[in-house]
Image (cartoon, rainbow, N blue to C red):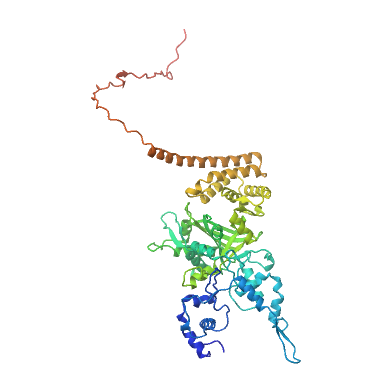
Length: 600
């Protein structure tokens, strides 16, 4: 049989013709979406990508998995007949399947032992001989085995069952999910960099992607309101579109959620975040690709303009001035960094969308708590394919990565508010401002002794990147404005500046005495300005409360007095208390033009 329906048995034809009788979740699970909840979930009915049409394989899978092996009309679609096995069950199943079976022969016939590698095909032998290169967890996830624990687990790096050997697909998956997109030699296989998100984390991620973001425009340009998932889909479409059609003609390897939003998704408690950071993995083979990426983003903004806006006179330059807050291009041949950043939105007090397009980036995090990256490709595919909403028994497999190195360690730091980093001199600004931001939010260092040394490196790199008072002033004011907005956050500005003052005062070793005093004076002046603004806000509020609690006494009615008419006041005189006063006007004599009096 070749897999076509014409050559299939009559029973399979009848089964395939009735496939629409099932709900969508039973039909589409062949795409690799799994659930890891503790309950029963919709399983992948057709985990293998065999030959033949999708409808035939789905129908055959459903027909083979039904208990009565009868027609599809007898299947109770309202009941949950199927379930995904937990990790413990899969482990026990693996032990059973790995057991050596002995088939004893009669007479002089030898005993056959199945399950050994000697009778295996050559391709399987070569694949198995390489299995020790990866740890077992990285090698076996290509088979689609999942865990249903509440925490983070080892992810299926290759959810699809493509052609080729298992080791080849696993290596390709690891290479595509690592942050540097490099060879396997650069991957630290001893550390758990990757993890599968639980249902609660996927639900929070779905809420973030379903959030409506507002991109405010300058002047008369309208505010663009779009859901984050629609914006990501549109930008990816423009990047992959041909250059002749207005796109960039580039291949998007993957899309990731980064920064504070990713930490918010993974944390058990609510984590505030100010920006929505998205990473598009691209390849910048030439300098023209930077311009193509910029054009693709601006064309996306052009498509998001609301109806009724006259688009004839709107140019890409005007869109850039209206909606782009900042643009950064890095093409460093010495360090090998090739990436660009386009920040959408420039209104203080609102979340900005930062689109980062990365080919290679040597340093992608400041501290362990902001080192998380969540791969969005499976979730975006779920949005395109699934007709049912995300639920506890039906949601996609989403993989997260910690570029810090160890996912579990970084997640522990996030849950317990711990500060840990390495080599802060590689970070622009040394991570000094972020470090003080964590301190003001009650984070504490993992190693109180080691952090003193790291503080010196932070201050040294900060003063290298911002050497004079004007640049330091601009940087500090912008950081306060972008990271401490809102009624709850503005009150932390004074404490933040005090933490910064203490760190600079105790850990600065690279400045001369007068330069250090100038920086400390700058921080003190900013702190006084913040304190004055807070007092001006609290004093009117306190006066209003006191006025409401203790209203001023009402004057008692006084008997009406007879009004007397005063005589007209003489010119040049002042009247007070019944007496006229003549003001004393000083008189000076000018002797500029007087002649000299001759002496006698």
